[in-house]
Image 1: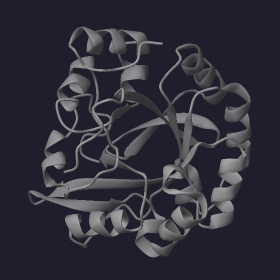
Image 2: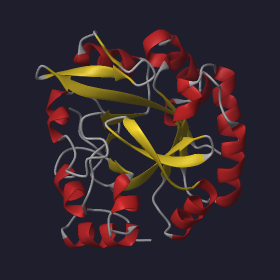
Image 3: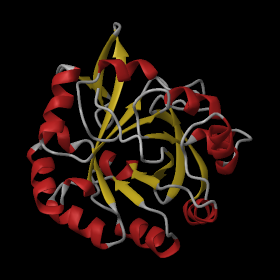
Image 4: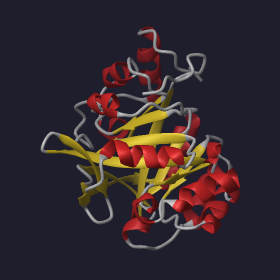
Length: 256
């Protein structure tokens, strides 16, 4: 696995899942529960001066609904945070709309299965800094498999080959989300990091964070950021609590 730039601050990134304009949380990529109001939650994170935020419209991909520009307009109107957005993106036009509506980066997941050329074309058109690849995965018979969250099934391609194909398209960042750890609050799946091929782009890990120590343990590895959702809704830890804990444990994060 590639090494992140040691001069850069490590990031703590809230992840917001949106369905029908409401914030939801899942457990194992199912059992979705409404946990908040989108506009109010964005405002809270804005006041907390979070490093950046990821917003995923899970309803757009599952329902083949396309990009919901109303979500982007609402968020961009109320936030100064760097924003990455995913959901319903199927074309270069979709990406252009997202970037022109306030997104700093777009996240591509499902299209990597059926239209991998879109990733390369997007990098060529908008630059690698604007294109993030998101990979969902789970353990099947002690082997990591790519998971398709729209079809609720595992992909039979080799895990490392799949990652290498995405990297060859020139993406600027990679988000790894564990289906097994999702919503469990029991810690990140650190083992996945040992299975990655060599790379020189930022890696973000997602799924399972329930306490600041889980981020501390994850940051012992060569990653650039920890993504989290449930910790902000179902625990006593606030964003500043997490940052102060990490700082006190010599993790290089920004204190806003």
